Image 1 (cartoon, rainbow, N blue to C red):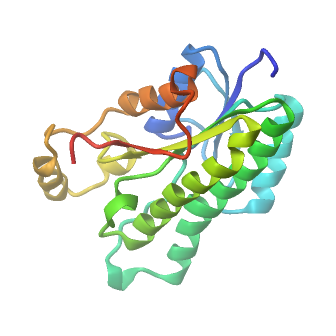
Image 2 (image 1 turned 180 degrees about the horizontal axis):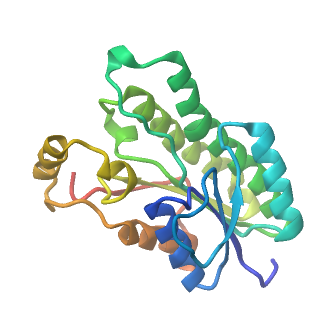
Length: 232
């Protein structure tokens, strides 16, 4: 494999994606960030804009990254779409967008980046799932999409192992960033009271697990989903 370690992290305009990208850059990766929006703060990564709900757009951007940056050694599928509405207000359009960003784009990126990794000796993929994918969620489209991420991670793990490609997922509970900051205060407080550690995760705590799974310290872990949920 090339001595240059290129990493692609999706969703770097958010706090979690920025924390992951920063941690990987500190670990020596050349990091590429991919998001529909530009980052709100400058970070140690190269930004590319793309709409993950459009495979045509995503494919073109991935080709551009390959030309300009080179093959990838690490992919972190962090970007996700979450729009809290009641069951009765959930529209087909929202369901389609949730699945496009959270499932189709993730599966497509895993497949396409794995092709690069297969041709260059191997690599690592880390998918950000959710506790919502384990036991359901009041936001049914989001929970279903994250269950799909957990399932595809297990399947990809079996399919890619022979090519020296490891793939794992992380299932966080509430994170003090992004989606975790848009919950109504009463809902958030009730959730935290049921969490044994009585707090939300800091983005860097999830980034630390990403870094571990991408490292040689996790060399015998693939197809797995690691729960990072404060004891839930």
